[in-house]
Each structure stands twice: as C-alpha cells, then as structure tokens.
Image 1 (spheres, rainbow, N blue to C red):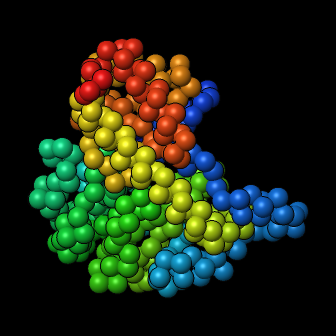
Image 2: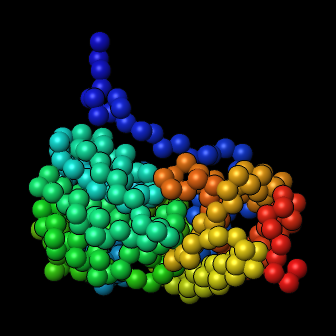
Amino acid sequence: MLKPREAVRTLKSYHPPLGNRQGLRLDFNENTVGCSPRVMQKLRALDVEQLARYPERAPLEATVAAHLGIRPEELLLTNGTDEAIHLVCETYLEPGDEAIIVVPTFSMYEIYAAATGAKVIAVPAVEQFRFPSENVLSHVKERTRLVAIANPNNPTGALASRKDLLTIAEHAPNAALLVDEAYFEFCGETLMPEFRKFPNLFVSRTFSKAYGLAGLRIGVLAGHPDQMHFVRPVSSPYNVNSVALACLPEALADQAYVRSYVDEVRSGRDRMERELKEWGVRYWPSHANFVLMYLGVQGQAFISAMRERGILVRDRSGDQGCAGCVRITLGSKQQTDQMLAALREAFEEIGIGQKVGG
C-alpha cells in the first residue's frame, strides 16, 4: 500500500475559517477596499493571447527589483508569501535539522518546515508578546538550519528590532533567517537589503495586504545572490501566473493609492487602540493592519455580536498564548467608523465593561 512520508502523515493542517464570509471582512487581514483602479483597468484589457502563453517572470522581476532598490538577481517572484516560505524550507532543511519559530505566529512556518522532516522548535514570545531575542539565540544549535520570523508578527502585531534580528543572523550563520515582512507597508521598517552583509538572511514581502492582490497570489523573496542561486531552481519557472504578472506593474505604479489606503489603516489602528483603552479592554499595540485584544470568556459572544451586525472578526484563541483573544483588521475610515460603532454596541450588549466617560 502506498504511504506518504512520516513527516507528512503527522503534519498539522491549516484550516482558515472560509465560507459564508458575508459582510465587512475584518477577519483575514486582507485589503478591505480592493486594488488600484489601474489594476482593474488592466484586467479588463487582457486578451486571449496573454492567457495562452506561459508566464515570463524575469522581466517583471527587474521592475520589482527597481521598486525595492535591489538587483534582479537578489529576488524571486513567488506565488504569495506562502511559496517563499516553502522554497526556503525546501532549499535548506533536511530530516533531522531544526527550525526555530517564535509563537504565536503564522502557521505555515511550522507546516512547511515540518513537512521536510525537520524538528520545529517553538520559542514562546515573552511578556506582552515581546520578541524573545535571548531565548531564540539560546536555542540556536549545530542542527539549526532555519529561523523564521514574521515582522511585524501575526497575530500579535509585535515588531522585533533590527538589532535583534541582525544579531540572530550574525550568531546563526549556518541557518537561513527568513524575515517575513508581509505587513511592511503598515510599519515602514525593513531589513532590505541587509542580506548583502548577511548572506544567510532572506526577506519576504507580499502584495496581498496593502496592494489588495491576495486573489492573484504574488509575493517576493529577496536574499543574497549566492543563496538565491540555489533557491531559484527549487521554484517552478511558471510559479506566478500571467494575470498577476500583468497587473503588478499597474499596482506598483499607483503608489498614491497604496499610501492613501495605508494612511487610513494606520489612523484607524490608532482610533481602535484609543477606543479599547477607554473601555478598559486589554490589547497589544500593533505595527500591522490589525489589533489583537483580550476578551476572555466573552470572546465568542463578541464575535457573534459583530457578525450579527455584518462585521467579521477573527477568533485567535487557538494560537499559543492567545486564549480569549480576538483580532480585528483595520480598513478605510468609513469602515473603521462602521466597525467602532458596532464594537460599542457589542460591548454594551454582552457587558464587556463601562466606557470611560460613558
């Protein structure tokens, strides 16, 4: 009887709560208003010839490299950030190796690393979900071949300092350090292009969040050209589809649209944090496009109350250290107005507390 590898047989699965997502989507950290109108215009102009040809990635890699201020040989376009993570794991991990992640975090680091047969070492964040730099360094051993860090982190919104990340790169030269900057636009801090000094450093980005292209599945993996030389053959030559390749230049060209959306999200993030503070609800300051808050046993009632008001929010109770936590994505000013009005009603309905001055 045909059997899969043991690592695959015992692999965890990622099960996003898809289906029946009707209403204001504040549950998946997606762009809530959609892509630039220029992207939609390009989509409408696509012809059958473009769809009939195999996609050519290289020309757009030069465009993206120029946008990021790096060289084409230092990056690879990927099928979303997920593939970037997968490629690093497949390139550098073997059975018996060790991969370090900081939890709670994005589930796919553990899944892709474990699928190779590597042992995943989960290092818990310290108080207030701060980055545990000393604990990560203490777990770097001879068999450590990967350290994967989301920065800012999901679901906490916490940001690891440049100093801490580069210290890890320096002290773990035989391990790939993958810094996932999926939420870069909402914080502005990056390690691009520090991989020129640290050849074991990789930086990933996505166009799913600020750019509103989650449905097209396109991202970037950047690193030292000597290392990208080994990563590139692991990827399919046609990993990014022609529609995504055609639309991305239009998205990049409309930076005013991206900046406007990011500014509204950051303003909404500040408003939400002030609102939660007034209600006496515990939350964690975020550097991303969402806020994580603690509601304890009232979390499920809050999620249901928000859904009844047409707003989807995300239960994060299943993440390590996040029992009773709910995450809310921020969107446009109008959407934040709608969300905060519903939040106040939901808090009052389920008896979360008393708003200061209310």
